Amino acid sequence: MSGRGETDQWQCPSPGFPEEPAPDGLEAAFFDRLAVPAGDEVRLPSRPESAAEARRIALSVLELWGMVQQRDAAEQLVGELVANAVQHSGGRTVGLRFVRRPGWLRVEVRDPSRALPCLIRTEPDSDSGRGLLLVEAMSERWGADLLSRGKGVWFELRVRER
Image 1: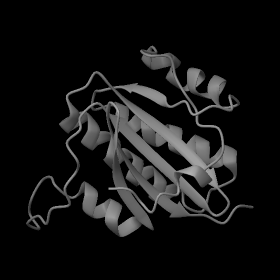
Image 2 (image 1 turned 120 degrees about the horizontal axis):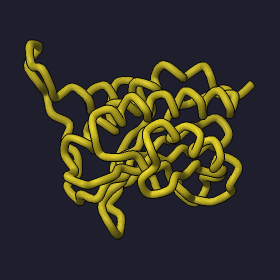
Image 3 (image 1 turned 30 degrees about the horizontal axis):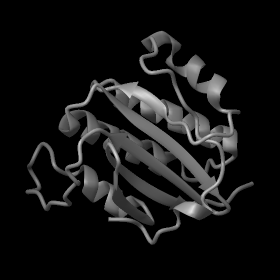
């Protein structure tokens, strides 16, 4: 499930991490990698608190890149995708990538599972199952791509750069 095959047009460094950073060194390691012009990704441990860490990182990246008008949506959506990856993938880590091009921000969460996400309709009083509904409602586009090892679930937001 790809989103129109625009991968070749995406440019900009993506931040990355060592395989298993210490929790208190997570943000420091992240900012050390921001200037590296490579297709790296941030590796977060596959545990529930990583969703909050991913939200903090998203806010920092958007601030650094001057893309602040969509920060609330990006923060919410990255947290949802990381939480889904942690809950459903069974892997030790999840990957987080930020990519920009003029007018667009793409955030991708990678995990080792090849099971693609399903958008399901839930009952109003259900405690779970709304994450992808939020992604659908709040993003311009979203999708999932099978990778050689696992999958990447992504969303895109339109942004007006300052």
